[in-house]
Structure formats: structure tokens, C-alpha cells
Image (tube, rainbow, N blue to C red):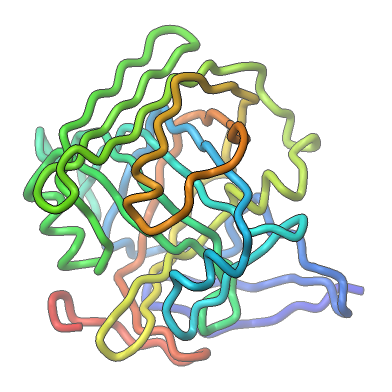
Length: 278
């Protein structure tokens, strides 16, 4: 049985949720369930790859703040290493020159926020632009770190590398060579693949509680992929144990994303956060 739920939304976003009634776990939609009509920021995510590992839910939960609950699939928590090229756009306008184009690598897990919705929790994000690191920390309260980074994409091979700068993390690194394989037809995308990639909210800490921002983009064009020469020391620097086994790897086609401003998230109550005054 299907149940439609109308839900209050942050400024610039509207949505209707459709979910299965009853105890069966809801499959996350591969299509964005809301619109971001008046974005605070626009981004292009280029040559993005996902590398994911299974983790004990208790370990991941121990690293999350009150009000944020680890989300699980197949009985496991999942941690992702996600490198890509980021192009930052003004809310309505072209890509920002130089300062708005750079590689990024983030370490993330998947959670339920205080509003009960599925989202992303970032353990860390690496970027080589000092101004971008400062701005992201100020406006979205995200744990960005300054890093020296390299990204080379040639044919079906993508090479990513990052070395965090500044004490006490100097020398902490991540690296991966991803080989892009065949595209996955939308009807062949598994519930696990939707769980790991179709995320339409981020959560972040604020002095008054947990904050949220919503994101809108087209469904991912996923490809099967493999990885070699993988360095995961970035995960350990973020407090996680060394991942076990080989990662589950996906490569993606480029997408354009729109983000709302950051909002306070207390149950279903949301109010806009004044930047820099959390």
C-alpha cells in the first residue's frame, strides 16, 4: 500500500514523499523527491567515483552526534570515499573562475536525521582552495580541510590523490585508481546502489543542534567500476578503523546539483540559519 506524505520544506524546496506503509523498509528513490527552486549554490560534480566499505553500525554510530542515527543496508553501515572534480556556480550564474573549480574528496556515511529522513553525514572533505575551505566551513558547517590534490582522467581510467595539509594531519592521504566499466541500466540499479548514491539531504552540526540542506540533481548515471592502488588513511584520520576487504566501486556520469541554504533541523521544525552564526 502506498502512502503520500506532504512535508514542510526549507526555503526554495518543495517535496512530496511517497513511501510504503507497514514495517517493510522503504527503498530510497533514485529520483530526487523535491525541487530546489531558489538555490543558495549550484555545483557540477565531474568524473565522480564512489568507493564504499561495510562497517559495524555501532562503530559508525559512536562517531555521530546526538540526533543523528546511522542508516544501514544489508545489516551494515557503509562508509564512502568519494573523489571528483567540483565546479562551483553562483546561485544564478556561470562557474566561478579558478577559485570555483578544483578536485574534492569526501569521507561520508549514511544517516537518518532528527527529521527521520535519509541523508549524508560527512566525516571530512578535502579541497585545495583555501578560500573554498573557509567558505564551506562558514556557510555549511562542513569539516573541510586544506589539501594538496591531483586528479587525472584519461579514457576509462581515473586517478585521484589527496594529501592533507596542516597539523596535526599533515601527510594524511587518500589515493585510488578507478577503472570505469559498463553503464548500469536504471532498471538494474539495486536497492543497495540506491541506498549508497541517491541521497537528497546533508546534515551538519550547529551550536543549536543539527542542521540540514537539501540537494537536487538528476538521477545518477552509474557505471560498474573497479579500483586499485587504494590508500584509505584518510578514513583512519577521521576516527574509523581500517576498512576490511575491497571496496564496492561505482563511477558516475557528470551531474549538475542545486543546494538550499543550511537550515536548523529539529524534528520537522526548520528555520534558516544565518551564515556564520550557528
